[in-house]
Length: 80
Image (tube, rainbow, N blue to C red; front, side, top):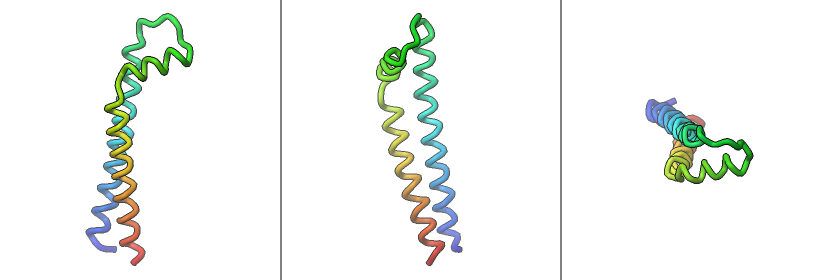
């Protein structure tokens, strides 16, 4: 195992961790925005998630894709 492959695995894990943090921030934002709501139906939850914006979800998906890419390239380097 080379040091470069190990660095790719660590970088991939950090990108996946960042993705999880960004996604949880999206749900925390939606929870804060829905504090004053009286109804708790699934439609209300999805409308609050939509009003919180899609920037965090988009960044989370991008970070997850980068993390998977680095993890796969690091694991391929280990098998060679």
